[in-house]
Image (cartoon, rainbow, N blue to C red; front, top):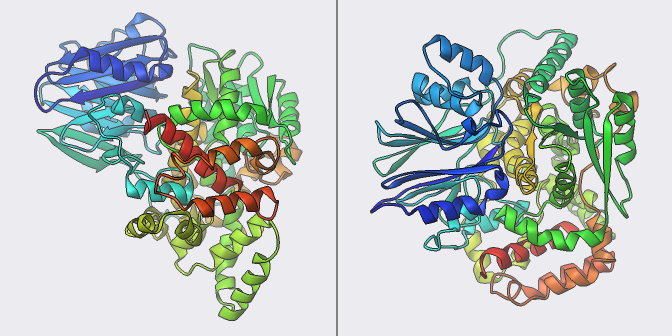
Length: 619
């Protein structure tokens, strides 16, 4: 695992100092080594977290024998040994035992199509001296980040901070990025919160040659299978075998490895599979919250005891939130309003004292249907058939009652006519009515020219069955920009590598071959995953309902963090900057503090934006 950065200058030569400054800014991603390749107007930089082949032979940027190909790479290629054997049979000679060198030789052998052969998580850039082109790629589902400057000059990096380290890059807010953020609590690729800074989308490559960028999609989930259905048990058996092999591949490491264990189905499955390939107790790490109505630590203990793991727990209280916010704002580079980033960062910090790599359960809900909104969305069509006055009367009646956050969101979402936008409405921090009051009228008029639902519409209609439509949207839109970004930034902030076996592309492709009725029914979620894990996981874990992983900010914001939140939302630097309606923000805060509404997510969205603004826009 590493951090990468680089540039192709338009005029003149690059300076070594700028390349060093860029890679130093993301040094937490690779504290073990760093290196620079510079040749005239081209520069690549890398900072290395040593995981495979800890020797100096893994130094990057890495080159081939005649130094015509140079690589800066972040990630892991899990099938690198098989690829290496194949390449050696074709005459390639290796000097290291790294997966990095496999990429170099695979590019020599297969050109840009090399990405089709990689099983892994990756973001890399290859400078091809002979063809005078930069070839960049991001893994299929977006586990590893890749940002670039969308201007005449080519600048790229693992994190935005390395791009804006150059003070000539303007730090201007992009209106689409602003609208996306206050809609969903994060940016939506390819846009970011910054003008002219973009994300390379998952499953895409970028070639920069002769001053022009060419972007190409190299992978997508295949269409529904036209082959006949198989017995359900065969799908369950294939799921177990694919998951077992994905975990086997991803446990390859020359440094200590553990598992993040929430006690949920997916992370418990990771522990079960990892235990099969470890000759010693697997190290597991769990987190809980003070003041939470529900804690999963007891479930995690059941799994840890069942598999005999070396288990560690962390309990987080509200007093730890405030010091972490500034750190997260700096590490995320953009405003990010998922409060779960706080416990993931703190848990990563604890785990890093024992291991360098962790397996996590990200992806299972998006592949096999784990969210309650999948159930609710199936009933939205029935609700839409009710007479308009009935829907309105019901909404008004519920709206007058205190709190009931989920019920109110349910009614608001079901009232949206467009199916793709309706599904997106389940994920909103601020709905359209709230945004019209949050922003200054002039700003709101400009924001209405942007469409935060475009990505949802793009993916919603690609599949025939409703459940697969929802899963397709979440895999392409929600997963990379929320959970994968959260996991990457929160773990790498502590120099900890996280791996996600459930997102092995073979598992992803398999999941969309599974009939929808084996994933979600009218009343049950994640059917095939639960059935496949029978006899492997404790029955209590198989039967437990889905629980969201988030900090109890509803309670904390009304009690011990009340003064902190009130102070941030009264700060004239951001709140009074001209973007927002200050009176509306104070009204939101009052409703929450009095317990009349549950508004901790909208409030945290403003707090996270203010913290980011202070870190990046006021410096």
